[in-house]
Image 1: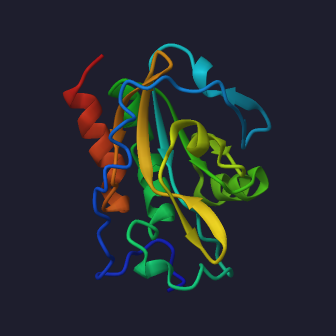
Image 2: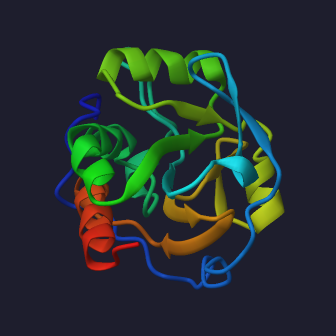
Image 3: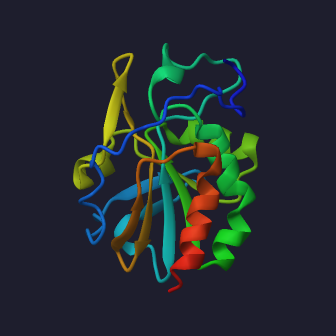
Length: 188
């Protein structure tokens, strides 16, 4: 399927395997990650307020094939619709108490910059090609075609600690709305 904005009707639902149960209350590591605007962000020094950090496997690009069997991997498909959801709900997320929103994947900064431009994202993306955050926090990953990718999840970070983890994330195209509901239901 080459239409990255739509999801197949038979998309497999990821199951909660407990791989994120340990995250709430965990301190965020002092990692500095490059952003799509050429700066770096230290995850342990995000500033006051809540940060929404949605982590995802990879964003498809027009004219580039996704890995073989991508649609059959539970939780893999849907990165572009998820990013667009965070774009479309960005102002509402800020109004509901998020001080900032970031997307993060293992794709390099140049790749991420193209995604920000093409999808007109109003927030910066973080690149973690070494999957350092996964190593530091024991985040779930999966392998496809010899490449290790992040498993989709979202962290709410406050005062350098993970306040809440959304895992598994499904459906990805509705996830920003789920985060928005959580922020509204859990005011600061």
